[in-house]
Amino acid sequence: MSAVVEPYLRIAGHRRLTGEIRVNGAKNAALPCLAAALLSDEPSRITRVPDIEDVHRLIEIVKTLGVEAEFQENEVAVRPLGVCGGSPPDDLAASLRASFLVMGPMLARTGEASCGAPGGDVIGARPLDVHLAGFRAFGAQVDSVGGRTIAHAPEGLRGATIVLDYPSVLGTENLLLAAVLANGRTRIVNAAMEPEIGCLADMLNAMGARISGAGHHTITVDGVERLSGVVHELIPDRIETGTLMIAAAATRGDVRLTGVSPSHLEALLSKFAEIGVEVRRGDDELELTVNAGATLTATNVQALPYPGFATDLQAPITALLTGAAGTSMVHERVFENRMQHLNELRKLGANIVAGGSVSAINGPAALSGAVVRGTDIRATAALIVAAFAAEGESRVYGMRHLARGYADLPAQLAALGADIERV
Ligand code: UD1
Image 1 (cartoon, rainbow, N blue to C red):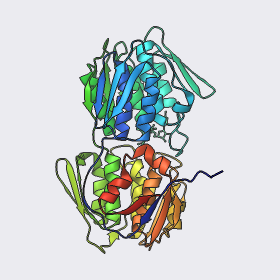
Image 2 (cartoon, protein in one colour):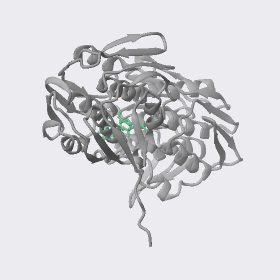
Image 3 (cartoon, rainbow, N blue to C red):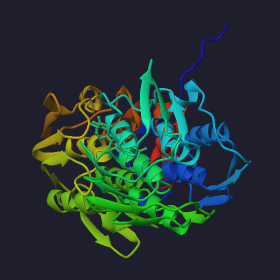
Image 4 (tube, helix red, strand yellow):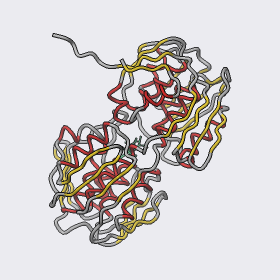
């Protein structure tokens, strides 16, 4: 009997990345927009959809709820089949966090919704209280039974003022998805301001919803009776963009990224200026050049809700800062357990002292190749960055995490000249 062999990336370090890449559409916009298509009984098409596992899983989920959905060449076509209803299979719900986004649309359309415990990266407790309190404010009865959430609103949802305890991204999206068909006006106060919420609101407004203030702290929604189908293009993936920029900087590269939204990356761009990476920005492109052998300067980073520094780039920038001169302090303030990459970075030779959600990175450290394992999507990306900065060969495990969130990161990096191979 042969054992199952786990795939890994073989990476030879110290290759300078050069060239041009067009980034994919945003993972974190694809998922709520796919859920939004459940709100209409007309077909919708979403374009620039990244070919990632989480998208395919959510497609499987919406297909169990009364729609046909098909992914083809970075587009997802959603065709309602009549009455929608039901609950996602528990194993699918448990395979990603965004499975819970079907709750808002199903509750708004049918007056009932249920979903097993959602899964996703294990980076903290990740409660659902923001979502549930919001559904209750709309007048729904919500019960949690053995990890499963069951919500009923036989009289329909009524608009409400909902003050979020925390500006949760998926929480804001779920409530927006419910509010568009609720009776009357909803105000979501202390809403998350991530650009992906703007992308979702744009799609919903094109379907006939009446949302204003998306991207600000307070979002106002006037409920409508029905929504039509739409063709909607996703925004560029700012996390993929940031990961490629960080990888390029780690190799002292010269890389141009096209089809991006520089304004979504202000926090990263400001850190790049501090560490000494020159970035030229156009309307929809970013070009960064670092001279071979250049020394980067240490800086401090706090991962926060948008427009603060993205928590999804906290692990990758930590990997970059291992090579910067001086001590960098990195404070993760969104998730309480998102420092699991530190031990792996140490195996590559990083000098990091950490406690709780704060790390002190002493650099520049001379990294050398090692066998390391990513335990979530962005931690795996961070280890790829570190392997580029390391002398010699590394093996990076964690491919199944990477595939959930990056469409083709190893291929993109190979196109830029990296010596990277899936084994
Ligand atoms: C989304 C993103 C993820 C990103 C994160 C923060 C998607 C599919 N995923 O995840 O890539 O890292 O935003 O930018 O868009 N919280 C509560 N109560 C809740 C919900 C969340 O206390 O009901 C807390 C969480 O425990 C966490 C913080 O809020 O500490 C942020 O979580 P949240 O904004 O909900 O992240 P997600 O939407 O799950």
